Length: 175
Image (cartoon, rainbow, N blue to C red; front, side):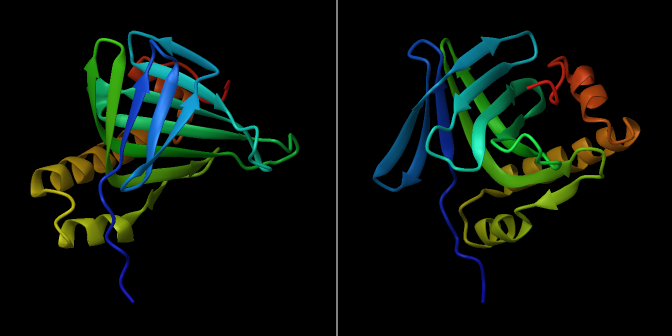
Protein backbone atom coordinates (compact mmCIF):
# COMPACT_ATOMS: atom_id res chain seq x y z
CA UNK A 1 0.00 0.00 0.00
CA UNK A 2 1.43 3.37 -0.96
CA UNK A 3 0.96 6.62 0.94
CA UNK A 4 -1.77 8.94 -0.20
CA UNK A 5 -0.44 11.89 -2.16
CA UNK A 6 -1.78 15.08 -0.64
CA UNK A 7 -1.40 18.66 -1.68
CA UNK A 8 1.31 20.93 -0.37
CA UNK A 9 0.19 22.72 2.79
CA UNK A 10 0.44 26.49 3.13
CA UNK A 11 -0.22 28.14 6.46
CA UNK A 12 -0.54 31.90 6.81
CA UNK A 13 0.19 33.85 9.96
CA UNK A 14 -1.18 37.39 9.97
CA UNK A 15 0.28 39.32 12.86
CA UNK A 16 -1.98 42.30 12.22
CA UNK A 17 -5.14 40.24 12.83
CA UNK A 18 -3.28 37.88 15.22
CA UNK A 19 -4.43 34.75 13.38
CA UNK A 20 -3.00 31.59 11.88
CA UNK A 21 -4.83 29.98 8.97
CA UNK A 22 -4.28 26.30 8.19
CA UNK A 23 -5.72 24.37 5.24
CA UNK A 24 -7.75 21.31 6.24
CA UNK A 25 -9.32 20.22 2.96
CA UNK A 26 -9.49 21.68 -0.55
CA UNK A 27 -12.33 24.02 0.41
CA UNK A 28 -11.86 24.17 4.19
CA UNK A 29 -9.50 26.17 6.39
CA UNK A 30 -9.04 26.49 10.12
CA UNK A 31 -8.41 29.96 11.48
CA UNK A 32 -6.87 30.08 14.95
CA UNK A 33 -6.39 33.11 17.16
CA UNK A 34 -2.81 33.66 18.26
CA UNK A 35 -2.50 33.84 22.01
CA UNK A 36 0.95 35.43 21.71
CA UNK A 37 3.32 36.36 18.94
CA UNK A 38 6.64 38.11 18.66
CA UNK A 39 8.74 39.12 15.67
CA UNK A 40 12.45 38.86 16.43
CA UNK A 41 15.61 39.31 14.42
CA UNK A 42 15.64 35.54 13.80
CA UNK A 43 11.99 35.14 12.81
CA UNK A 44 8.50 34.90 14.27
CA UNK A 45 7.36 33.03 17.37
CA UNK A 46 3.67 32.27 17.86
CA UNK A 47 1.67 30.51 20.55
CA UNK A 48 -1.82 29.11 20.07
CA UNK A 49 -3.78 27.75 23.04
CA UNK A 50 -5.50 24.41 22.41
CA UNK A 51 -8.69 24.68 24.45
CA UNK A 52 -10.41 21.72 22.79
CA UNK A 53 -7.42 19.35 22.65
CA UNK A 54 -7.47 16.96 25.62
CA UNK A 55 -3.71 16.31 25.42
CA UNK A 56 -2.14 19.60 24.27
CA UNK A 57 -2.30 22.81 26.27
CA UNK A 58 -0.57 25.04 23.71
CA UNK A 59 1.48 24.93 20.53
CA UNK A 60 4.43 27.23 19.99
CA UNK A 61 5.93 27.67 16.52
CA UNK A 62 9.03 29.47 15.37
CA UNK A 63 9.17 30.53 11.72
CA UNK A 64 12.78 31.10 10.64
CA UNK A 65 12.82 32.36 7.03
CA UNK A 66 16.60 32.71 6.62
CA UNK A 67 17.05 29.01 7.46
CA UNK A 68 13.91 27.64 5.75
CA UNK A 69 12.57 26.20 9.01
CA UNK A 70 9.42 25.94 11.09
CA UNK A 71 9.96 24.56 14.59
CA UNK A 72 6.96 23.34 16.55
CA UNK A 73 6.58 22.29 20.18
CA UNK A 74 3.35 21.20 21.78
CA UNK A 75 3.08 21.70 25.53
CA UNK A 76 1.18 18.76 27.06
CA UNK A 77 -1.67 19.33 29.50
CA UNK A 78 -0.18 16.66 31.73
CA UNK A 79 2.72 18.46 33.37
CA UNK A 80 4.16 15.09 34.38
CA UNK A 81 4.58 14.08 30.73
CA UNK A 82 8.28 13.40 30.32
CA UNK A 83 8.65 13.47 26.57
CA UNK A 84 8.05 16.67 24.62
CA UNK A 85 8.61 16.36 20.89
CA UNK A 86 10.04 19.15 18.77
CA UNK A 87 9.17 19.05 15.09
CA UNK A 88 11.53 20.78 12.69
CA UNK A 89 10.08 21.17 9.23
CA UNK A 90 11.70 22.22 5.96
CA UNK A 91 9.58 25.10 4.66
CA UNK A 92 9.63 28.12 2.38
CA UNK A 93 8.59 31.31 4.17
CA UNK A 94 7.56 34.47 2.36
CA UNK A 95 7.10 37.57 4.51
CA UNK A 96 4.92 40.35 3.14
CA UNK A 97 4.57 43.06 5.76
CA UNK A 98 2.37 41.51 8.46
CA UNK A 99 1.68 38.22 6.62
CA UNK A 100 3.99 35.23 6.96
CA UNK A 101 3.22 32.58 4.33
CA UNK A 102 4.76 29.20 5.21
CA UNK A 103 4.80 26.51 2.51
CA UNK A 104 5.51 23.04 3.91
CA UNK A 105 8.10 21.09 1.90
CA UNK A 106 6.78 17.88 3.49
CA UNK A 107 10.01 16.64 5.09
CA UNK A 108 11.36 17.24 8.55
CA UNK A 109 12.79 15.96 11.80
CA UNK A 110 11.35 14.95 15.16
CA UNK A 111 13.38 15.28 18.32
CA UNK A 112 12.69 14.16 21.84
CA UNK A 113 14.65 16.24 24.35
CA UNK A 114 18.15 14.83 24.85
CA UNK A 115 17.91 12.33 21.98
CA UNK A 116 19.15 12.38 18.40
CA UNK A 117 16.75 13.55 15.70
CA UNK A 118 14.87 11.20 13.43
CA UNK A 119 13.65 11.96 9.92
CA UNK A 120 9.89 12.46 9.85
CA UNK A 121 7.29 12.29 7.10
CA UNK A 122 9.66 10.58 4.66
CA UNK A 123 6.92 8.36 3.16
CA UNK A 124 4.65 11.36 2.56
CA UNK A 125 7.58 13.26 1.10
CA UNK A 126 8.45 10.42 -1.30
CA UNK A 127 4.81 10.09 -2.39
CA UNK A 128 4.55 13.86 -2.94
CA UNK A 129 7.69 13.85 -5.09
CA UNK A 130 6.53 10.81 -7.08
CA UNK A 131 3.04 12.29 -7.48
CA UNK A 132 4.29 15.68 -8.67
CA UNK A 133 2.97 17.56 -5.65
CA UNK A 134 6.51 18.75 -4.91
CA UNK A 135 8.72 20.10 -7.66
CA UNK A 136 12.25 18.80 -8.02
CA UNK A 137 13.51 22.18 -6.77
CA UNK A 138 11.35 21.99 -3.61
CA UNK A 139 12.36 18.37 -3.03
CA UNK A 140 16.06 19.25 -3.31
CA UNK A 141 15.56 22.19 -0.93
CA UNK A 142 13.78 19.97 1.62
CA UNK A 143 16.50 17.31 1.49
CA UNK A 144 19.34 19.80 1.77
CA UNK A 145 17.62 21.62 4.66
CA UNK A 146 17.05 18.40 6.63
CA UNK A 147 20.64 17.22 6.04
CA UNK A 148 22.03 20.63 7.03
CA UNK A 149 19.99 20.66 10.26
CA UNK A 150 21.06 17.10 11.12
CA UNK A 151 24.70 18.20 10.79
CA UNK A 152 24.14 21.33 12.86
CA UNK A 153 22.37 19.35 15.60
CA UNK A 154 25.24 16.89 15.67
CA UNK A 155 27.74 19.74 16.07
CA UNK A 156 25.59 21.04 18.96
CA UNK A 157 25.59 17.53 20.52
CA UNK A 158 21.81 17.37 20.04
CA UNK A 159 21.33 20.26 22.49
CA UNK A 160 18.26 22.02 21.07
CA UNK A 161 18.78 25.24 23.00
CA UNK A 162 22.41 25.51 21.86
CA UNK A 163 21.35 24.89 18.26
CA UNK A 164 18.42 27.35 18.31
CA UNK A 165 20.67 29.90 19.99
CA UNK A 166 22.98 29.64 16.98
CA UNK A 167 19.96 30.45 14.76
CA UNK A 168 19.24 33.60 16.79
CA UNK A 169 15.84 32.49 18.11
CA UNK A 170 16.67 31.62 21.70
CA UNK A 171 15.45 28.72 23.80
CA UNK A 172 12.92 26.16 22.59
CA UNK A 173 12.54 24.42 25.88
CA UNK A 174 11.48 27.57 27.74
CA UNK A 175 8.15 27.73 25.93
